[in-house]
Length: 236
Image (cartoon, rainbow, N blue to C red; front, side):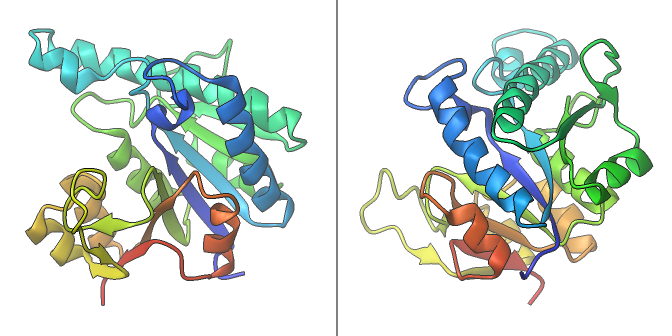
């Protein structure tokens, strides 16, 4: 295996499946079956999940809502998604822990770095919810932060397309796919891999990012094995 410990970043929209909103149970079951396979192979897995399928703070703030309040609502949406994923993963036969940056002891553990690492060492999947616990930071930034705190070997950014393109491949037939990129190229080209704060954090700490298609069966396992899948973003 190429990676021993990974942080998988899932968008909230991925959990909605073909729907535009909410949670689609069959889609979550399929995703979690693949994640469970990875965990059962001995790879330590942490997850960070977005909340865009339920509530998006940036969109609400652009329509007049206070940005901090909107972001906190978005963080709570990620907790809902985390609980749904936890349920599906445990039904797939793996042990999990949801850890939140905002304390809510009745439904999840508070995020404590050393405890999260211990869970990973015991073979549990750690689902990090509520972003960083602070407004004005995206779940991309939360993923970069948690990956570094938990000493992950890489961030696996699961998307709807099979890598990073110079423009939207769903809109432009002549879009060019990159096999690899540097952090600087991502920032200079303003490619929508992750937000600039997250990319800068990864660059400063030399943490590779692999962008791949979540909906192609077996991709998560292939990335962890070291197969060439999607686009890798790294220093050189």
